[in-house]
Each structure stands twice: as C-alpha cells, then as structure tokens.
Amino acid sequence: MASKYRPQIPGCIGDLDKGTKYISDADNRLLYANDNYCVFIRKPKIEQIGHTLGYLLAFILSIPATILSILLVFVFNTSPYDVKTEILGISCFICCCLGIYVILPELYQNLFTRQGAPIIFNRKTGKVYVNESYFFNFKFLKNPLTYLHPNKKRIKEYDWAYLQGVVVHNFSRYSRNSVILMVCKPNTYKTIDHILLDPLRVGVGSYFVWGWVNNFMCFDDLIDLNEGKYKTDEELQFKKEIIEGQDWPDWMVEAFNATTHDELADIKQKYNVEAS
Image (cartoon, rainbow, N blue to C red; front, top):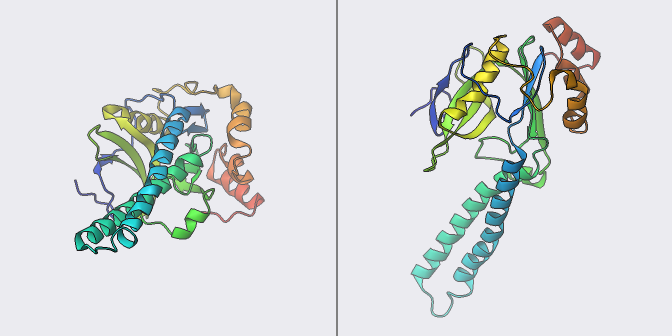
C-alpha cells in the first residue's frame, strides 16, 4: 500500500498507534530497563552471525561473476564478434554491480554492528538514543565514499513525539515484517530520518517490541522492568558490558537517566552540547 510519508517507504503495510494496553513481549531483545529508561537490541548475535556469513558468501561469489561478465565482453567475444554475447555480458555486468551495491551495505551492517545496535528510550524526557552502524538503515542510495569507512556510525538523540512506528514487509515468500520508526518534521509526514526498531519478524510477532516500548513510554503496568537480560539493579554491569567502549558520548550516558527536561538541559550544558 502507498505510504503517507514523503519520501515513500517501500513495502509499507501501515502505521502503528502509540498508546497503552498493547500486547507485548520483550523476547530476547530487551537488555535492560529501570524506571527511567529501557534498552533494546536490534541484532541478536546468532542472527548477526548467520547474516554475516550469508552476505559474505554472496559477496565472494559476486566477484568472479563480475570478472566473468567483463571477460565475456572483452576477451571471449573478439573472434568472431557476436552482438548477443556482448549484450549478455553487459547485462550480467550490470546485474552484478547492482547485486554488489545491495550486498555490500548488508555485509557492512552485520560485520560492524556492535552489541546488537542498542536503542534506548527515556520515558521521563521523551528522548530516544541510538548508536549504530551508518549502514543500519533502509536507505538505498548511499555516497560511494562511505564504503571506505565501514566503521562509520551514527549516534543520535531523537524525540519520541516525532517518531512514528510503521510496519513494512520484506517482499519475500516468508512474509516477514519489520518495524521502522519514521523520524518526521513536527506536525508533518515529511521524513527526515528513520530507525530500524524490530527487524524481520513473522506475523504478529513483529508488533511485540513496539507494544512493549509503547507500554513503557506510557508508564503502563503491563510490563515487567526485570524482563531483560540485566535486572533493574544491574545497571552498572549493563553499562560496563554493553555501553563502555562503544563510543557513546559521556553526556548521552548521563542523559539515559535524566528525569526531567531541565536535568537534561543541565547535562548538555555541562558537556557543551547544543540543546535540541
């Protein structure tokens, strides 16, 4: 179906409403939660390893296929010359290039995603924080120069009020869905960014994490803060094992636990961070 967002997002199924009383299941995605913030991973380790191996194999196979298509045009088609062979070789070369263009970002995303690409929701300030590979997104057109910087990250703060959950499908026979957070300009459907919240789930399971986050952000009692890998009183252990050494800015780590907008503003002022 067509999306109301501009630019269009491919595979859009529909919007997800914000509010309480959602059916939710933290599954194995919830890392940690306390009364201020919760943390979800978006790339479980076993899934990341499987995807890395799959895309690595596809990339390796694409190299000889590309070389063969070039040889087909410039070496094997010289004597005698055949137009059909040349067209076939050029077509194969174009397909190989397009394949590499699709495969490489996926390979980079899986190779260079650290700690499951955590996403953090602070319900008292209404802020959302991400630390992820630059390639961890749905953008198709990318600056070719970014491929020279595979470790490039985006570490950003967003406003929950301007994030809209959208379900998209992956166009495969397995009919798996993903939940994307569209970042819109205030009071518009103009998309300025997007965040992958819950990738590739089957059927209704794709709504569970969105439900848990919504219940959390609305202070609903349906959720259990101790459902995660780390219990509520294990914040220091969580930060030591997941946050430290992952390039999170110091101000942002403090902002996870901010309880008011004034407190958040003080933290940003302390670290000379421009207020958003």
